[in-house]
Amino acid sequence: MNKSTAVMPTIGLAILVVVIFGFWKVNSDLKSMGGQSGLQNYGLGKSTAYDLRPNIKAEIDAIEQQLADQSKWPKMAADVQKLNEQLAKLVNELSPSEQEELLPRLVPRRWEIDALWILANKPTAPLENLLNYAKSAEFHLSKKPFDSSNELGERLLGRIKEVQDNIATLDRASALDKVKRAIDGQGDIDEAARILSRYDDKDLAAKLNEIIQARGISNDIDSAGKEMGKYEKISDGALKEYAIVRLNQALMDIRLRMISTGLTDEKITRKLGKLEKTVTDNLTQASNARQSRDAEKMRKYQVWALGNIQKVGLGEIEKPEKQKNLSMSDRVKAQFPQARKSAKKDANVALRDAMILHMAPINQGILDEAVAQLFRKVYQKRFDELDEVEQLEVIKRFSTTIKKLPV
Image (cartoon, rainbow, N blue to C red; front, side, top):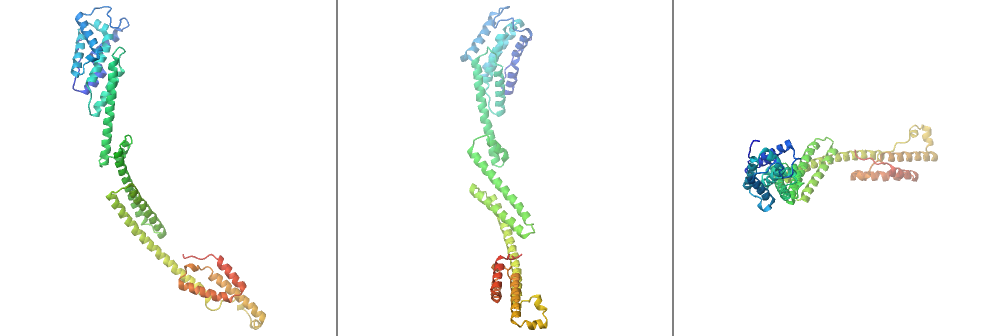
């Protein structure tokens, strides 16, 4: 077997990972030898074929005694390195058959020296170093031989827990730093919110929530501005006014949200105020246009109502058709009481029908005062000309006729 000396570096954690995963050169050689010949023919730690030279046996015993006594464990990496070199030197001085025979004793000692090396090289930031260290330590602990030191195993487990706590602390600090940068406008707010959901930091949460609320309100204002641009193009006056009224209510809701959340962002306040003015101006224009339309409708309604009133109030009511075609002899006969009575009844019916046809559909509640006075005057005059039967019919029909509205 070629002699080799394992060198334990003291300057790089990356080298530590290689060392731990490789179990060092000496350990690898020992395992190789054990695989070739097997251990079933040897008693643990007892020579059956050879007697070790006294000086080598004494040194191996001394190393085992030192590893068995916690008070003698080396704490500095340099001291662990010396112990490693001492064991490697002894192994290289053994013959192949001696090495093979001592393998069951050497493997646990090699694991213990590796564990001491890991404990002596306590890692520091950055986070990557801690992660690599914890991974290496966990791997080494998972390969612990049965006859190795349980106390070292517990020490290693404690160190792993300590490093994992440090990792959690650094991870939290790094995550919260990313949140702070996002709050300062140097990062993604949505990502910051996802990060902060894993940690409990009320101050950062309050600041981030304020930013998210401000962004939401700002986006709502922008959306409302786009809607206003669409509404300005609506040709239907009534629909346009309805849309703008709804938008104005939405802006009032946004204003109320700002007050309730205590948001005082000047930029957002100015943007909202500018849009509110635009909406108010458009709402005024739409309202004026509606009033103009309503006024024109009312004007046309007064003209229509006046024309209908005049059809009843001016001149004589047109007689029934049979009265128009009376012959001279019939007209003479009409001078007699019975004929006069029949003619009067026909005249009442004609007047009643004219009042119902022309005046009953008029809505007196929306008449201009002058037109309303004429309505009442004509109605009263013509109503008095009717007999009680026709008056009752007029009253009934006026009360049940659907009134016409301005269009």
